[in-house]
Image (cartoon, rainbow, N blue to C red; front, side, top):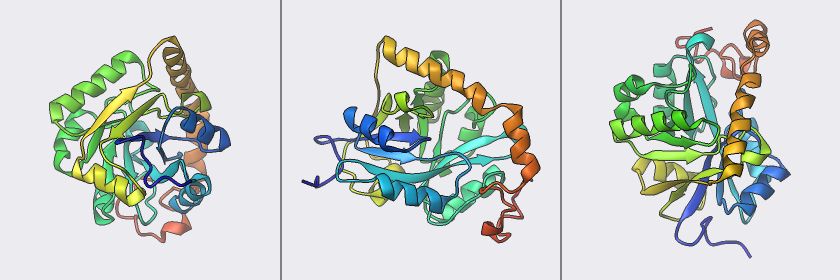
Length: 259
C-alpha cells in the first residue's frame, strides 16, 4: 500500500546527495530507512537525471533529481548543489552566474562539502553569498573527521541551516548519513520548499567501525575521480553533456562560461 507521504513516522529521512542510482542503491536505501534520495550525478544533463529518478521512484522511496554544478575552472572549482531546477544549467560557469540562474528558476541553492580541498566554497564564499544560500552541508560520509569538523564550523559561523548526506559514489555508502526533516515530503516540490523555508531538521549519521571504514573507502575513491587523465579528457573534448558549449544550451550561458 502506498504511503500517504514519504516519511518515517513524523520525520522524512533524506540522503541529500548520492552519485549513483540502480537497484542496489534503492535496496540499500530502503534497508537503512531512507525515504528520499537526492540524485545528482557528475556531468549528466538534467533531463537524463530526471528520467532516471522517475524510473527508480516507487511507493517506498522518492528519488529527487538534482545537479551538483561545477562552477569556475578546474583549478578553482566551487561546487553548488541545486535542487528544483526546471531547466538545464551547465558546468564551468561562474559562481555568480550559477547562483543567479538557480534564483531565476527558484531552485534551492545548497553548499556541499564546504572547505573541502579545492572543490568547494570556503567560509568567505558562504559569507559573501549568505542571503542567497539555503543550506550548508555539515556532515558528509565521504569526508574525513577533521574535514567534517571544518564543515560544522562553517555552519556555526554563518548560522545557515544544515544538511547531511552520504555523498555516495559507492553502493556501500548509501544511507551512511542523512537529514531528518520534521515534516512529510511527498514530492520534489515539498523538498525544495522545505530547503528554501529552512524547515527544522536534524543531521544524522551512522556510527561504528563499519561507518568509518566505508567513509575511508569513499575518500580513497576521490583520488580516482580526480585523476588528471579525466580532467584532460573533459577539457580537450569540449563536448561533455554539461559543457556550456554543448548545443543543448544554445549559447545561453556564453556570457558566464569560463571555458
